[in-house]
Image (cartoon, rainbow, N blue to C red; front, side):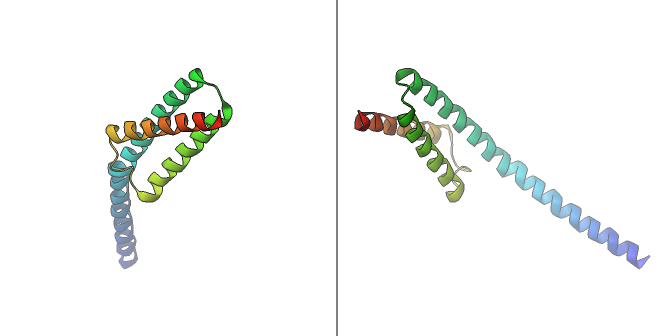
Length: 107
């Protein structure tokens, strides 16, 4: 009987820990994924607009690289938890301006 009680206690502690972990995922990670999904959607729209303006694979690759570095910095700095739509649009405008700078430099 003592052994059965220990096993039940271990299971209870495990279940409680797992429940807390799932709540953390629900509260922070899902929101973070939604934000990144919105960022990517806006980035794709920007890339499509720029392709229509000038389909220069070198320039678009440079922009894509900048996007990747910026997105990676979100993971490292843990900023994605606090981003809102305004921040997203500002950063996409910065990428667009950087693309224009690349366009002027390469021509």
